[in-house]
Image 1: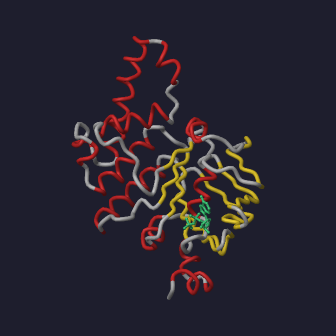
Image 2 (image 1 turned 180 degrees about the vertical axis):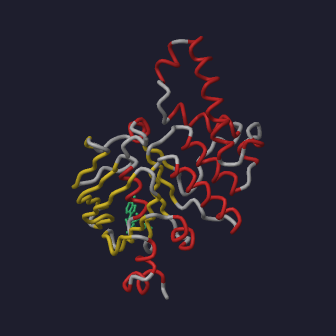
Amino acid sequence: ERAERKLLSLRGIVLAFGGVRAIDGLDLDLRQGEVHGLIGPNGSGKTTTLNVISGYYRPQAGSMTLGDAPLPPGHPVGRAARGIARTFQTPRLIGEATVLENVMIGATIEGRAGFLEALLSLPRQRAEERAMAAQARLALEAVGLAGLAGVRADRLQHSELRFMEIARALVLRPEFLMLDEPAAGLSAEEIRRLGALIRAVSRQGVGVLLVEHHADLIFDICDQVTVLNLGKVLAAGMPAEIRTHKEVVSAYLGA
Ligand code: ADP
């Protein structure tokens, strides 16, 4: 049987920059095992929402819960420890390090592998490093980059970096994964591979929040879609409902 699937819930989240409410009373429910698309015009609050969930911004009002427990505003490192991982719009990497090392960094800096423990106990550190390298190789295999593990990261193409970012998030073994425009700059074939990867990740029970401009990808792979406008939910539902939603079509899809 499946383990009970957790819900990551946002209620009444408000986040303002100066006088501008980037998020204005947002409710959102993400379920483990589901892909949730977050779309909306530029400036509607998508990235800010992702930053709130992943602990980069502290909302001025509202609450978040993860499973049965409150998810207090916190630090990104704490979020990773609670099983929430993310990627960035602009891939972050250490160019001189190998692809494998870049993925392992995900496990040490943001992850669950006890920093202090690794620091204080050398023999143990070696064992942990081996374990981390093994996990990083698995993550690279999952995203189709196993053959590039030993290559310097600054030699990778843009699309390969995007997949490397996902591997770095997966190595944390997240319960929830936030993806910020992962399809940007990818070819149609790469987007198809990305979609298949995201579905495979969600089938393993991970809850995915997908911020994406690429409407086809959203409608192809999402279980739920939320449309933001001016920091508020304009519409929410299954892809088929959203695709034909009158206000969404006129305000966002531009048809
Ligand atoms: P989206 O991701 O949907 O394009 P954002 O979440 O980036 O939208 O931005 C929502 C609103 O918040 C916009 O009006 C944007 O200008 C503003 N905003 C976002 N980040 C900041 C920031 N760090 N400082 C000031 N304003 C910001």
